[in-house]
Image (cartoon, rainbow, N blue to C red):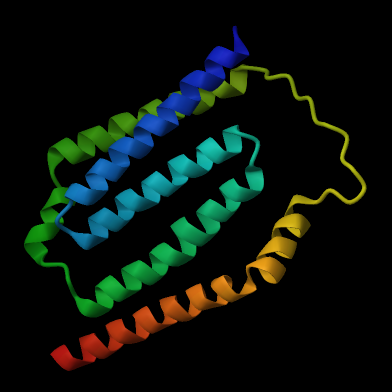
Length: 170
């Protein structure tokens, strides 16, 4: 079996799933359903990063975006109570359940097929000071410290603003 063909197939599969998830993200009426589709997109993008040998960025993609930021987003949505019971219907239709089941079975088949494919593992010899995490942290906390901190203050201000707006409605 050609390993380049397997790589291309999975890369395009995750790209197609990311595009489909992003289209479903922008077409959902419920903000919670939209957030869940965005988490799906983040996982697909993370898988693409891992396939491109950027494992650190793939892990950070899941931890930061699909984890922390989406939790904050869901918290703010629930705090503002933007969802109406009629909008949750897009998660409970039979078509969505069947589609989710088929996608789940396809992903299970993917995992089972990949466990049978033995990819040649050729790891380069690590250099003494070449650490991906250290090099990223060095640039982030020295060269880009101010934009990094401004982003965190901006996110904090957005959360405080959402809380203030939610308090006014009550």
